[in-house]
Image 1 (tube, helix red, strand yellow):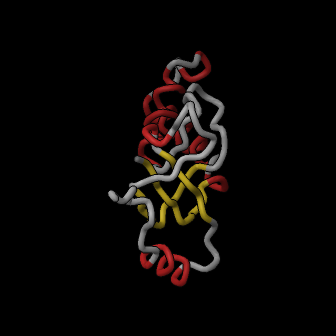
Image 2 (cartoon, rainbow, N blue to C red):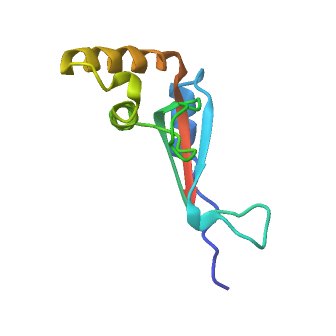
Length: 120
């Protein structure tokens, strides 16, 4: 009989937990793992790594995307701010300062965690 290949070696995950016992765990599941037929799906692709995520709704149009890259977040924030009337009359230096101030508001919401990625 052919194996499903869903039972994975947990050495990497155990090592990450041993090295980072105070970090919380976040699980990210890929689109191929979603199933209309079952409530839960076992995944054949499983990876774990220490990551950092923005654990809040940034309040601009991000379609529920969870940021795990500060530069990507800042680019999206900048793009959103450029479309807002309140920032339209600012000089480049003033806009940059406003962008830095706005990005700083999110600093407490960046969370370091062990991220488990799973998909099929």
